[in-house]
Amino acid sequence: MIEARALTARFGATTVVDGVSFSVAAGEAFGIVGESGSGKSTLLRVIAGLHEDWSGALLLDGMPQGRHRSHLGRVQMVFQDPYGSLHPRHTVDRALAEPLAINRVGDAPGRIAAAMRAVGLEAAHRFRYPHQLSGGQRQRVAIARALILEPALVLLDEPTAALDVSIQAEILALLRRLRREQRLSYVLVSHNLAIVAQLCESVAVMREGRFVEELAVADLRAGSAQHPYTRELLRASRGYVRQRRSA
Image 1 (cartoon, rainbow, N blue to C red):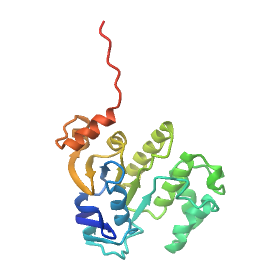
Image 2: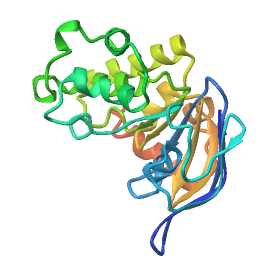
Image 3: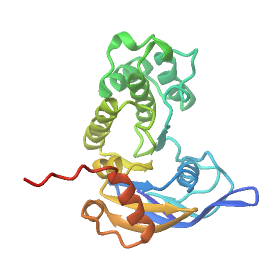
Image 4: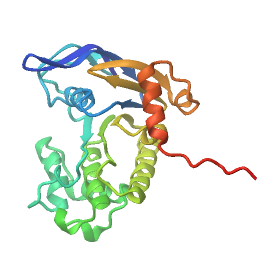
């Protein structure tokens, strides 16, 4: 579905993504983990067409993509902050109608209603504003907006980071269901290994703009990482574990 070859992205003279290569098959969920500032979100923005200072090769369905790409209807992105990514003065209806209008897609009322049902939003939410919704509801709107153009690839930039733990579980379950029902491919960026392990089959560990290791999520769960930085992330993700008292 998506393939990157020696992808490099810069901000001025600073290289943020440094020669990254990976591929994601149709229907696969691929995770990218690493600490803040490692280049994860910039990599997603390159794929989404939101950052143009890059070099290397990027292919969608085997077709090379340039900086001004025509694939953007097939690739959509869900951002980290559901409140910041929604216009505060636009209703849910307007937020979902906008991508349809930009891409000249008809039957907006029907598509909006279907998108809301798909993400578990009631019809009563349609004409509410972001401040009238909970954090989880706002993220559901953001997911509906990403899916309304029926993309093949969805980019997820820390989609649960701004949510309470209980709501995180609901959003992850929703993303798993939508992927299965709509046969989506995901690229998920997170600093949380547990979230990546729930949603993805494989994961790349990113540090200072480079992939230091790629491994299957099954190997990640088994603690089979080879690179010292990956092992460090695994140790940090376990947190404090209470030792069982001996009888």
